[in-house]
Length: 96
Image (cartoon, rainbow, N blue to C red; front, top):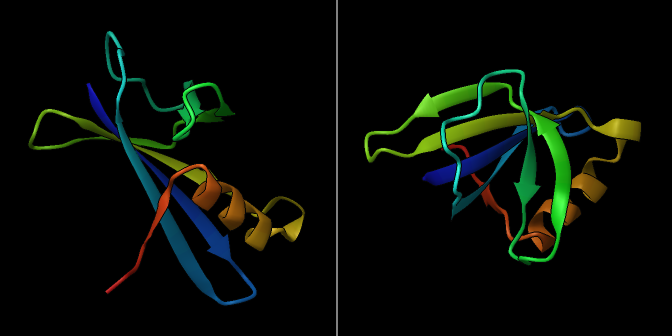
């Protein structure tokens, strides 16, 4: 199944929301439900970013799914979270 992982980070210091995505094929037998925890993949097959709770599930027109996650700026380290996502292969989606 083609899965897009999308993270939302609320950056209070910059008064904006930043979004990051990563797309990959995952052998899910079914789409995860809201509230379930899933392992977060990276561009390194031997590592992941741990498990996160699914905030929302969106079915795409091409038969894939988009899983929404929220990072809450733990310890107000937005820059550290952004750096971790970028190193893991996620790309920032700029709002237009």
